Structure formats: structure tokens, C-alpha cells
Image (tube, rainbow, N blue to C red; front, top):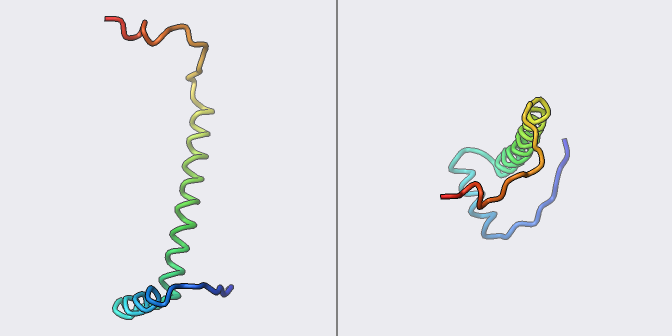
Amino acid sequence: MANITMKIDDDILLKARRLAFQRKTSINAVVKQRLEEFVSSDLSREATLKGLEAFFQRSKARVGKKTWTRDELHER
């Protein structure tokens, strides 16, 4: 497992340590969890995009040449 070094404002770090202590966890655990969520959300996004692309490929709908005008569609 890799280690990282971060620069964090002293006030933020102090508040984070207090909050982590209240929640019976550590700064390391909080950062690790947030990084996992960050990566997971991107993986979920990629999977969604791949699913949409596959759906579009399977779809029988096709886009043809536009043969109408906006005004024609909204004639009253």
C-alpha cells in the first residue's frame, strides 16, 4: 500500500482531527474512504456511458436528414 504526503491548512486539519475523534475514526480512514468514493463514482460514470453506447448501437432508431423546419413543426 502506498503512502502520500499532503499539505493541509492547520485549522482544517485540527477540525478534521476533532471530527474524526468524535466519529471514532482516523484522518487516514476518512481520506481513504473519500478517495474510494471518488474513484467509484468515476467508474460508475464510465460504466453508465458504456451502457448507453451499447444501447445506442443496438437501437433500431436512426437519424436521417432533416426534412422539416421548426416553423413547420409549430404551425398553428
